[in-house]
Length: 289
Length: 289
Image (cartoon, rainbow over all chains, first blue to last red; front, side, top):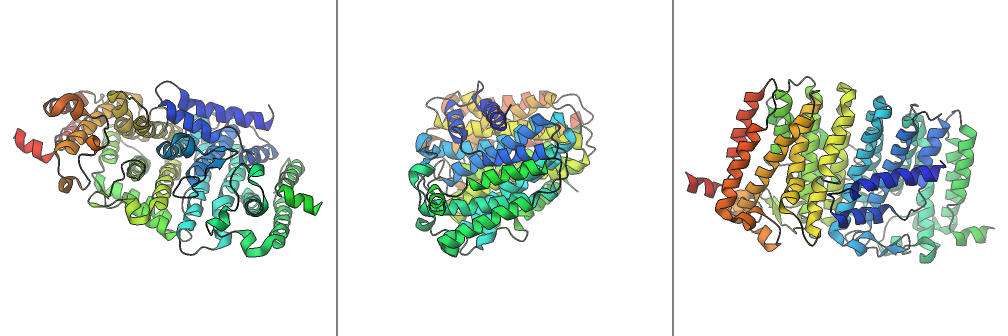
């Protein structure tokens, strides 16, 4: 199976747990709406690519790690969209989960997806039990405290925040969890893979800031201009449009250089080159061309 | 160390992860306010009591299991208190977390506590790695979908709900997770312990309904009359006051009978007798005396 099919299959199996008899049907519907239709699935594809580069030997566990990271990403989007944060009406071109199903079910769907991310790991653990502790720890650290995406989001509630730290946690932490978990699911030493994840996360965040500043709502499937509207720290405000584009390109180079020696090093570097070149907003890519 | 000291120590160590350098201080404060000052700690004490009855041999892992269950309970309270659910002003005699720290930090503190519950298990897993998969699965199932406490809470969003199923999931599922995880942390077979947890959970829910109907806000540290105000399914509305008191007593008997054969069976039964006799609201206990 190609990577995207593996990911969709693993996510579909996970969400299907909510659709088994006895689960409140509206909660199941809210969870499915949180995970499908798919976004770019950047993090789980990264997780699979790293595992392959490390000589993957337990594909079921790698699929679970990839699904876990994506479920946590989806949970964070649902909660970030809530009225008390971004109060967003649309996401991926459709109404957000709280607009579709109401705020209570959006809170609960996010909660259930967080739990499901760990259930999925436990269910696959029989394939390589000794790797589970490391996977739960690495993925948990990417999401929780002190420096996961929840901590990153919480910097928006402080009176001041360091831009680099905010972005490292809000975005980089889960990209790092994707690379670390990819390596750990393949039985490889995980820590050397952290830098790659952090750099890709930083590149992605800068690209996201650029899209928010110059992209169109149609292209993104969600409202633009949110950083300015919510006075959030962001790279375009700090570096200017030109500076942010240059920084994105520099970060992509640094990510390529951060791939540790491994059996599939050059294939992975190609994957990263393709992925990062897709990050520039359409309008800016046209201008640059 | 006595059980309560073990629990408070394990919870304090867990929350301290949010207080390490680099974590947004307001998030750390919201998480601490979610877990301390302590409530009755019924679920983690049950977890420890079951592990002891099973001949506990990895106390650090049992402490982690107990802390995990309590962190998930605290997370559910913080989210249940949100404006989109109960919109509660007080909890344990103090302002609720969203009143103290605002709604965004209450959402994030709940999210971070859910993640922390699994981080705590992973951190203690080195003590008995082969038991981790089972613990994550059992505790995850008690919280998530299809039949954990999040699913139970979601029945409030459906147009109709079966009272027994609603209570079994909203309360019983985490009590069952406490007994199951207690046994699993001690290396015992977990499944025989499910019935005890479900019966205690049901007893606790009936007691909670009674307290909501006849208790005082001072005694409870939170508003009363909420079930009626929110038209929630509850045992007093369904069985009447007298019927609910009788049902509570019947459930306590059934819980005693559900303790499986184990080295510490009679000590555990005494523990359960003491616990369940505490459940009746003060006013009703006085009337009965």
